[in-house]
Amino acid sequence: MRKIIYIRVPNRERHDIFIMTTKESLFAGIRTPFIHDTAYSIILPGMIRGILMSLDETKDEIILGIRVPDDPAWREKLLPACPDYNIHFPWPPLDGQGNEAICPESFWNQMADTPEKLDRQEAHFRVHTLKLLQGIAFPGCRVFDPACSTGAFLASLKEQLPRLNYFAADRAEKMVTKARQQLPHVAHSDFMQTSDRTRFDIIFCRFANHEVIRHDQTAPVIDKLITLLNTKGYLIIFGHTPVNIDIADYVRGKNIALKMTSGYSERFAGFFQYYLLQAT
Image 1 (cartoon, rainbow, N blue to C red):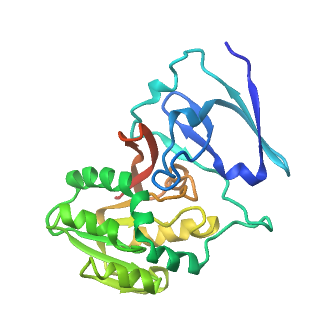
Image 2 (tube, rainbow, N blue to C red; image 1 turned 90 degrees about the vertical axis):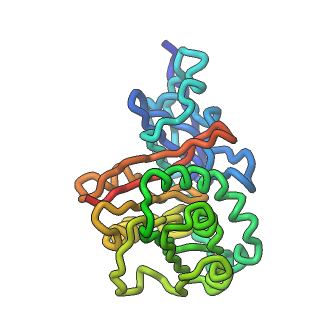
């Protein structure tokens, strides 16, 4: 049995640490974006360092105690990823003052002018989502994206599954303008501030992520989205950056079932956070 090795990660890089739980083991790894423009959210097997034996946090760094499995092919045997792999990034990125880093509104307006960047980042999500919806969606079901960005994600689904009813919203005016070029029902609104109780069968949450909203805002956002689901409706959570909270831990004791925690990209031979929750 191999000895434990210790990996020291300075606080400025701690947001790249992830914990991955499988049925057999608890692994730790460090994200190293390999194709930043197209696959920032993909976790490759090589990023997983080994089995997590200990974790210590000081004011300056995170210290991971890792044991590398004896089997030289242990990483390859993790592929293809099972839908119950749970990947969690415990620490958000920090800004220069040591506070949680959040992208300003101007960033999203800029992204509206370069939609192809967002589209490339979503390619593997679109493939995975289309396969999923072919199994759970039904003609006429109501699909809602409350932070639709340019609308390209929902429009790509509409093209392949035209018999569903699609609804979208965004609080950035430029994003709404772009989305209305592709979707019939797009509202300029912040769903957290509205009292509208319209219900949906499938809701996408693509913004409960690092650098988009704060960690302490995430649970209230998901709580609100759950109230908008029809009975047996689905909430699907993912994003370009890591999801802000451990969804597997969040759902414990709630009236919602966790059906899936990860997806797999055949193109990149890697996996990514992708949560499917179903209202009970």
